[in-house]
Amino acid sequence: MQDILEEKILKVIQDAGEPLETKEIQQLLENFNLKNITRTKVFYRLTNLRGEGQIKGKFVGPGKGVWIWWIQMVIANSGGN
Image (cartoon, rainbow, N blue to C red; front, side, top):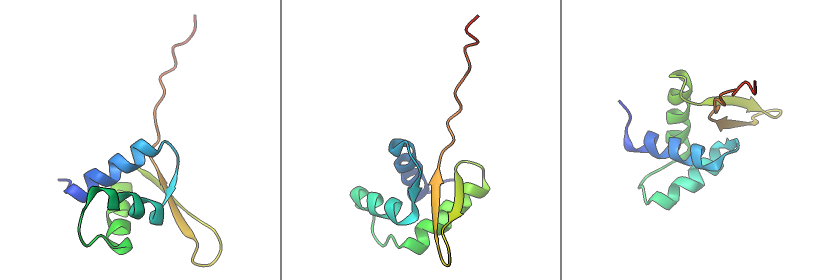
């Protein structure tokens, strides 16, 4: 069962249309007036969504680096015949 934060995270990622960093997602979530949203909470929900296969995520960069998140859109091939 998804909570409100997970629903908003999915909406933010879908609306973006491009991969977003964890920090960018957190900043965009502030527009929804949700209280006590920390980057740790957002990251936890993102990893849960990734584990459920609803989004994709990848660690990039040296050292601590950053995570980027996206939703893989399935584009149906019309065949063109």
